[in-house]
Length: 77
Image: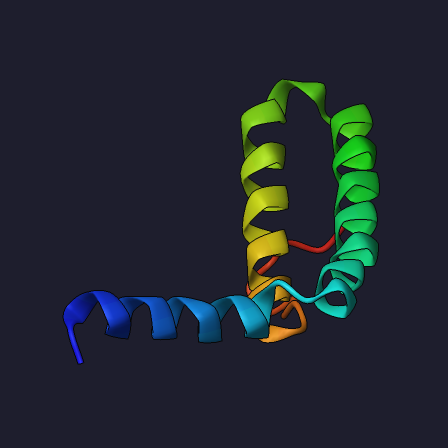
């Protein structure tokens, strides 16, 4: 088996696991929840816009990778 064939096989496995319609539909509630929280944060403290965007991006990536978000170490609101 050549490296090219191996690459194609691994790429196919990856796409089958992560790019299914069901999986993509599951991202929508996460995106909506995080954007709502981003908007609330921006209204509460508009001067911290960069921090809010960083939190939003980090939170989405953690939720999509692990399936949940941990509040440990986050400041209380």
